[in-house]
Amino acid sequence: MTDLSHFLARAEALLERIESLLPPPLPEPDWRNALAFRWIKRNGRGHLQSVSKPHHIRLKDLQGIADQKLRIEQNTRQFIAGRSANNVLLTGARGTGKSSLVKGVLNQYAAKGLRLIEVDKTDLVDLAEIVDLINDRPERFIIFCDDLSFESGEPGYKALKSVLDGSIAGTPDNLLIYATSNRRHLMPEYMAENLDAKHVGEEIHPGETVEEKISLSERFGLWLSFYPFDQDHYLAICAHWLGEFGLTGQEIEAARGEALQWALMRSSRSGRVAWQFARDHAGRKGGKSARAGRKS
Image (cartoon, rainbow, N blue to C red; front, side, top):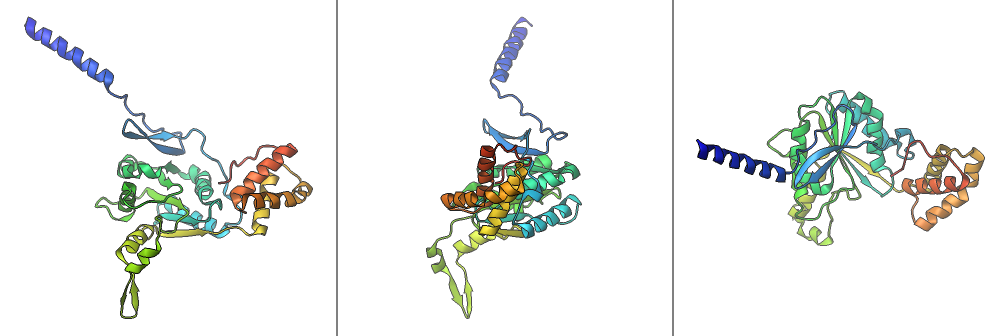
């Protein structure tokens, strides 16, 4: 018995040493209080980290994209009501409100059970794990992939395709994917790929490479396109944000020339540039902080 007791004591001590070397258990998501989450990888393991201060931009602050706003709101309302809805791909010019529109949707419908999970492109290989975590939750989740694009052979590409429409496991009813990208087909397109096209009678059939690239974007049921703003739209956005910073109508009108010069220096008339101008101009004039936050 003495030998057995000695062996058990040594075994217990060894287990304690091994346990001290193991990473601590991953924290449970704060389902009750958090509105937004990030998927974070640590020591090769992923977990949902609550976002303590999500970006509270309001939909009414997004100017010049009324049609896109209307369509994504309708899709989201269907989703949170438990009706059928589509995954959404928002593509187009930089700084025109793609990311802000998704954040605004969360701000608008969080009280009705909508939640947002931001996933980096490099972590899309973990999508199946994320789906398992939220599969039985009562909330309605949007997985948000910002500034999405792929190069050939990236593992996240196939993982995203599977979750969208191609896995043996069905996508849960409480999940949609909203992604933004500057590329319509999410991958670079080369002139040489067009040489693979074949003529069959009077029809043109794209080559396999082109078909592969199109197949991912086609898995998004709703496409929203964003275009560069003209001068009037740009100035309207500047005026809106200057008003949010507390400037008077007369002060806003007087800032038009500076707003145009700012856009000229940045070689862009995007909503992001308008926000940055308003922030700079109002700061120099002693304006208050804008309530809605950064325009991106």
